[in-house]
Amino acid sequence: MRRVEQLLLALLVPALMTCQGDDYQGQMTRGMEMIYEGAYQDAEIYFLALARRLSRRDDPQALSWRARALYQAGKVEHLYLGEPRRAVARLREALKLGIEGNLAFQVQLEIANIFYDRLRDYRNASLEFERLINQFSDQQDTGPYRYRIAQCYFTLRQFDQARAEARLLVESHKDTRLAAEGMLLLANSYYVEGRYREAAEAHAKLQLMHPSDDIASRSLYEQGLCYQQLGALPRAERAFLAALPHHPRPDIVQISLSQVREQMRKEGFPGQEVEATARPGNARPATSPPAPSFRRAAPAVKPSGGKASGKEPVTGTTTGKAGAPRPGKTADTQTRPAAATGAR
Image (tube, rainbow, N blue to C red; front, side):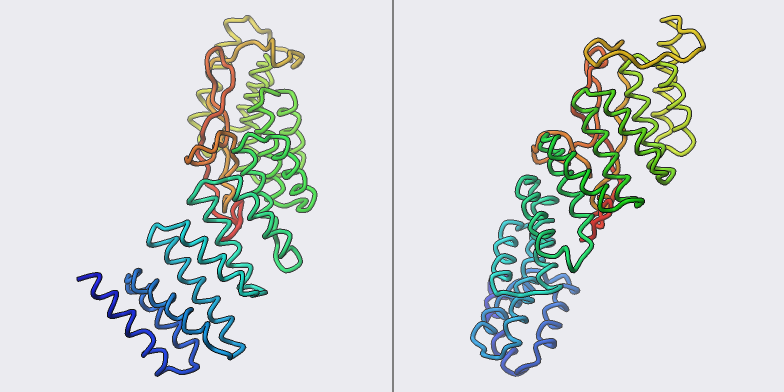
């Protein structure tokens, strides 16, 4: 029965559009009503038939409305029908029509988000976000999408490139939350590589940026993990204490604080400061500190550091035997771009 309904709709659409003549907005509204009613397959068929119909028109406006119809068909396939690759093909067809302005931006953004969110293809996602930045930086604030690129490279474990993108973001968006998120990703990339001293220094620079309490608390906690790995246990204790009041997971901070205090007791640390002079290779082993928390890019907006395996991007570290860091996965609450705050 469903197949019969689809065939009837395909036959009805041309007649409907003929009656409406050049009322392009009215024809688009009819397709949107199908989406609102939950008739997603009907909406896909309708928009594709509308695009075919408009391809035969000489009206200059018909080209733009045809692109809009293909865009809506692609969104339905992506969001409701579970056909992301078909959606990408549809959206690329819309771009080939030579559209410009906000419509072209929305189509390109949809392609990039499909690769990032649905296909977990971070290499192609980085290319599509780069294309977005190159084409629309004079029209839009592309900072959130620069952050997405950094996240892609983090997930692919291309940490040098991730840091390069993060530095560009920090430089171009000074004194903003987005810059602080970029610096947090940069610091985490050092931690994942076992470069604890450089990670701790990056966190110190981030704290000088006077970030919001939630970012500052995450940075302090992760800086404490760095000091713990370096054997500077009193510094780690102070960092955990400073992070505790505003951290989104105070239970995790409390666990790390208890662990470092127990380690200090066993090693007989005096009350005075102990300088972090150890190198990552000969650091005193930490007692399995929990992973650094990290916010999603993307509005959040999500930093990543693991292999692109079809799962969520990895955004922190956990520890293996003897406290050695390994890639891990942490909660990340950032929305889509505008995502650290990229907007879809």
